[in-house]
Image (cartoon, rainbow, N blue to C red; front, side, top):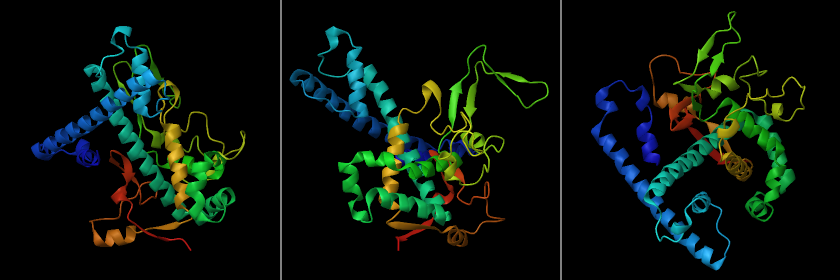
Length: 327
């Protein structure tokens, strides 16, 4: 999966046809796909056999995405086919595609968000101090017990209100993905800022929702380019209170991200395990010295760690940094 992400990086902007359609790269992508499909297919068949066995023994089934998919599939399967020993090939092919998507999104975009949280905390010592104080209040001063406490008292994760605010603000400034929807007949977008109220029909169009543009729009977000976690802790009516529909890193509505709660949980647990143990120091100056380039150093919104396409959006140059034990 990681190899495929690397191979796809920058392909959409590549104009050289010899590089864009490199036979070696295409073969590697195909081979990667075959390997992923093979292993996911084996796991699906294994879970299916476990499902059949648990049905007969009335044991509680697992709640992983594979178990849920198989259980839902069996609900809608004709009664005459419920005891077939192998999965239907058409369903299996569809399930593999969806699970690959879950693996990619759950791994890549979640990891990127963790990186940006650590990056922003390293830039804002006051915020780092506040989040560390919250973790000490919830988990106590001994950082070596955090994992045990989370395992034995998972409800403590729900008490991390400031940590949640930090994550939401990081996702506002650095959303790792955009959204895309297929237009429908009779539906149009209206430019409310134009004098003539121009409309744009979306029928037979792919509507690309650029989260960065929405979530950094100063017309809706005060201090739009600043890292202000407190905006997620104020009451309605406060000038910082987030606009309705303005925060959408997981998108909104019927097709929002089904894994968003799991992603937020994973990020909160990771930060609880890391931010009091380690300090992260950006090393972009050193990276630029070792990798000289013509002209000025590129930035976006004043950020050296601007986002670049690489599967999900990643920090430029992979966020070069040094990690040291916190003092």
